[in-house]
Image (cartoon, rainbow, N blue to C red):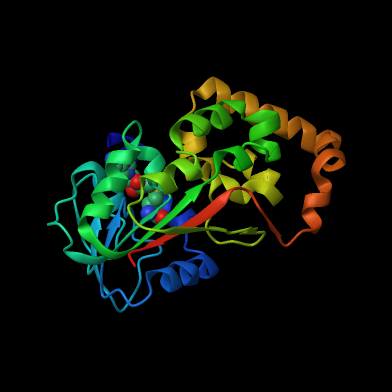
Length: 249
Ligand SMILES: C[S@@+](CC[C@H](N)C(=O)[O-])C[C@H]1O[C@@H](n2cnc3c(N)ncnc32)[C@H](O)[C@@H]1O
């Protein structure tokens, strides 16, 4: 829990919601009028015009929420809600922090939500192939493979039929996740950009220093451009972002 009390500072500035992703989440929530947002953080991607119950363990993250949208302090594995008490449950880039009991959190979402369950998560196999994780930050690739449940596993935990959608990450997305670095190697050199990603923030200083030095060197020498410069021509890239929409029949 305390993790985001440390790395959450300044989070809201860098991690502004991407309007396209927001719309996809809105659509997935369908007609839900009451929604629990699990691991709600600073409130990104929460739908307007619906009654949202935000559940968030970190005080630092909760303090970055708008004053009129407070969060209940709580964790995914023990949601403070009765069975079938909300129309929908959503969780955005949070369930990898529930490790080692992501399954317990998903089962809680199934318990409390009558209709839709909407999960924004990462396919760590795909993300691990992105240049940053594959060539430089292999510690995050290895960690992600452990803490992100495989997509099939996640779908298997859900108690209702689910669809999985690939969400390519736009070059100019306003949500500067680690995946957004695919077209912006310069972000690796920016301490604020790094600090807004839990991938970097969870690494020891010596790993971060090594990656910054390696990427800086390869940018300066042209090695990065030679290997990955073609990415600068793309408008969007599949860096592993996945939207899972499950709905009770
Ligand atoms: C990457 S942030 C995402 C926040 C927000 N959903 C967003 O999209 O901006 C992950 C969030 O999960 C929260 N979190 C960590 N462990 C959790 C747990 N066991 N149960 C629920 N949320 C948790 C963190 O405090 C953090 O706010």
